[in-house]
Image (cartoon, rainbow, N blue to C red):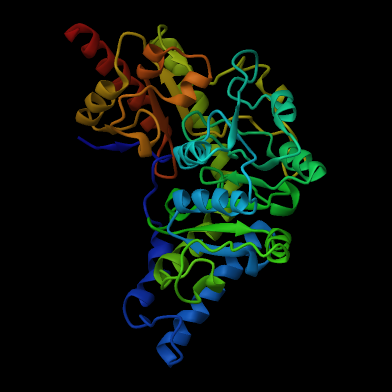
Length: 410
């Protein structure tokens, strides 16, 4: 049986082109980029070249890109940076549907005495899963130290109004962080247009290798912290990453990340059109063949574009990225369905891969208004470069059959 991988939101296969760029730095160009000899300088040159390549894709300066081990580290570091700038606990504002890397980190700061506000998302109408902007504006106070709202949600795919949030934060003088892990390489991102102070990304979400990511830190944010004598470093050690994130860099992974990023951006428009077509096909077949199923974070298909904000090109954008489908099938446990689908040759998931094995219902789906039972009866299907329209038809057929088997078994 030919397997179908439909869990691209969890991770993506390493691009062949990225691997080719990585191999020399795993073999003959293995030097430590902090070393002064030829091998070390070869590695250092590659490292700084990758930094420039990634910065260019974001319309950032190379000195604003700091390499990390991935999205979780970048998210945690972003919150640590912004909140450590304050001697007394203040307010941290996040969305109610943030990734655990932000959501759980915020709860840690809450235990330290910080006032953490989790802004709700809209539950009904045309835009379920989109941040309630009025509630966000009401949450901003004089002691708000940071607003952290993800660009694209990893479970339901909703695209948040990050341009509007960035403008609102700029006018209030509040740093803005966005977790762009699910957006980088899928949407055109400009830190200038987003007006962010901090932005996180992870290589393995767009064809790079695992264990590699970056954090964008605006020059103005760093300069302000320096004037106030605030230490923004994540770790203590050597002078790597300007001393902010010491430790020998993963040169091969970073070079591969830059290569994968350039390919993803180059192919972005064509790939999004293809994924949109497949998403519409799959959702139509789910509605036709599984009338009991409920598509989560789905508004009226004929009106859903009304709630979108202008994209970076000035054209309206779909408020959910194509390729990510979250569906609730009443009477069936999501984890059991994912296991049955695995045995049927299809790889899907329930919620975030980072939450796999948790007995708690997804906080993202509960924020949409789903009950615990409905949230636990939901699965996520995420498509990518390796999928075809025929895959979509086969996935829906196997989803229907596996759900029917589970209901029969009771």
